[in-house]
Image (cartoon, rainbow, N blue to C red; front, side):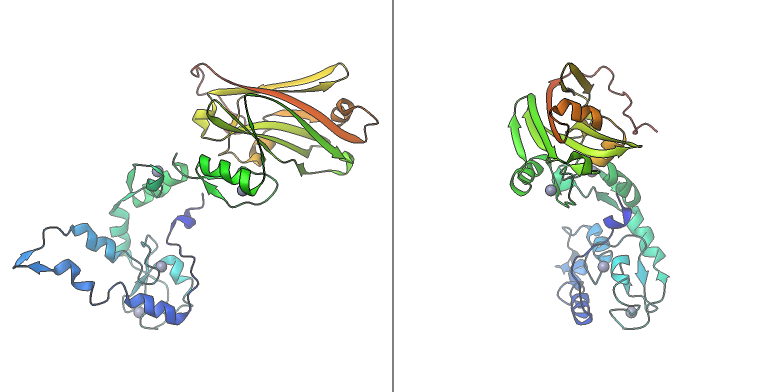
Length: 321
Ligand SMILES: [Zn+2]
Ligand SMILES: [Zn+2]
Ligand SMILES: [Zn+2]
Ligand SMILES: [Zn+2]
């Protein structure tokens, strides 16, 4: 994950007037005395001291939390690095030239704060200082999954139930229940195809979801087809399952047995690691029968659950290097 994307991000494109307006809001007179309220001569005990620190770290322009690098103008007005790139080198508060001054004191404060993982709303209970938090978030088990649909750039992400609905409704993916399957892949003029991705199929069994992929690509000099299964969940869970694929005809047969890869690994990564059933095009056309002008492959397969994984640490191609 790109670490920059974790920092202060706001999707609103603000013009200068809006920036000024938003700037004055967080420290407006109604809010500023908040931390110094004295009730009956006693400091209000319900106000947690950390609140003021968090307010101090709120970017006055976009109101997101500021993390290093934190910038300031010559008059000491602070702003986050995302906003700094947007204000054309002029302080949104005093309109002085911004220059390239960091606010190291505030950066130290930001680094020392314990913050919840940004996926806490997905169920992650972890709390870290800033830099450890950024590292953790890149591998957090609660981080959303990317849409497993291959063949188009899709930016959808979320938890598995969300993605299953998304695949069905937005990509019109075929959904099947059961742990055995029998799928036909057809293509006219298969010799013209260099890189092709067939519509994926989703299987629902053992209370889990699996994606069956079928692609054509060039493996070295040889045009090949490849079928493989991905598990909709994380890698640890994927190891609890195995699958087999079989394709053949006219007295020949190719079979593959493997562990489904997690959808955390992109279909491209799985493909490039050859972790699936690879069929040379000539053999695929032979299996298709007829005059070999058309691809007509029947792929059968089965998914099963392993006994509690004895070799849980087994090496996955291209993951152990
Ligand atoms: Zn900002
Ligand atoms: Zn300023
Ligand atoms: Zn987390
Ligand atoms: Zn999608």
